[in-house]
Amino acid sequence: MMTLTILPGHSLSGVISLPGDKSLSHRAALFASLAAGRSQIENFLVSGVTTRLLEALTSLGIFWKLDGTTLTVEGRGLGGYSIPFAPINCGNSASTLRFLSGALAASGTPAVLDGSKGLRRRPMDRIIVPLQQMGVNVKGTAGCAPLSMGVSHLPLKGGIINTPVSSAQVKTCLLLAGLSAGEPVTIIEPGFSRDHTERMLAGMGVTINSEKTSANGSAQYQTHLIPPATRYSLKPLTMSLPGDFSSAAFLIVAAVITPGSEITLQNIGLNATRTGLLDVLLSMGASIQIAARPSRNGEPVGDLTIRHCPLKGVDISGEQVVRMIDEFPIFAIAAAFASGTSTVRDASELRLKESDRISGLCAELKAIGVSVDETVDGFSIHGKGAIQGGTVDPHGDHRLAMSLAVAGLASQQPITVLNSEIMQESFPEFTDVITRLGGALEDTPNLEPSHA
Ligand code: S3P
Image 1: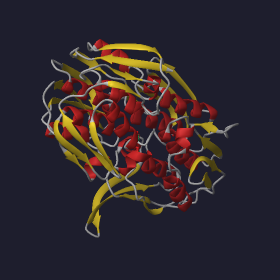
Image 2: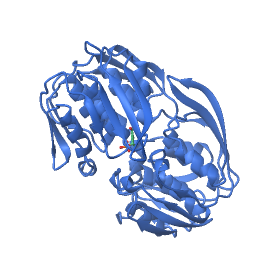
Image 3: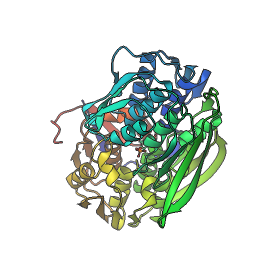
Image 4: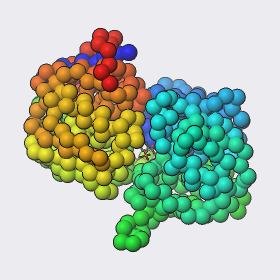
């Protein structure tokens, strides 16, 4: 167990590129395993959660090789998986479990999918019920992992599937299963979750499209996948992944709140279904310049230049929540340094992430002197333009850990993050990057027991 202490008073400056996007890395590795032939993926994110997926592919008989951050995968086509000898351990990674269940359904391969205590807490009925509707032989454990997948009769059924939550993990699972459906599949979600799967599968030769419609006065987002007369043969991938916007988010807020800072982040993925935080920070008065670059494999990419500047409070609700679903912990830090109150509504989904991101975030913000009120579906932060500092526990949540660490760059006293090794899950280079930009950190074994 490690403890990270961040010493305030050091401005950030420099130009850097970041490791590959987590969502794209998961998808590229998994989709490549279903393709007919060899894929090559550059700037692949090597981290805790992606390692789980790669290990899962090994247990399904897929050969892959990592050379630095270049991943080569020998795809065996839909139906090419071997039956694993043991339950597949997805660790803390809901993406791994939810995506794999769709790929296994398409492949018709029986397997048991399990994970950490934290992952077993997360809702899986949102994939189990629609997969069953498609004819997949899958059972959960009281709506959660472990999931048992038996042999399913192929082709699977298609039709219209309504999902009550806007979740790209659910959508991806169902689209992957839909690759082996015998008829078109339409997925309807209340908000437009990130569309990386649609873009990547389209590049692999899948007929897929999305549209915004309305029903009973509310917007709906429909994604249609059309299977061919014979089963899909997916084209292998050759791609270089952009830097992860969700990792960039920590550095963007770091530069905005730390006096004297100016940084440039190069080649960051700027898919509009992910960049809600940029719009929110701009509306708070942040100084962020965006320079577009040519898109990469259908994904928008650009450079971001961020300077320190004062912020004002903002309200967030509705569709904006989906576009920044992973960025609320770091948004909360920006809101604490802003002047005035910021309120988040319609975000109860945050309670079902790697931790309960509403209660955990509110508890740890209070521990460092932030005035915050918790609500059922969000929180209000009464920003004072400053944070006191102190010791925090990230509740086993990588994004909470990095957000609280960022607050320490500009707090009045240092911030100490206990159990900080959890950052390895999505951004193992976090401390190196902060140091390279001029931040001051001390990384030591845990000295105090966790208070979580
Ligand atoms: C992800 C989708 C999001 C996000 C997660 C990654 C993805 O989850 O929170 O970190 O890659 O599709 P939901 O779609 O379930 O909200």
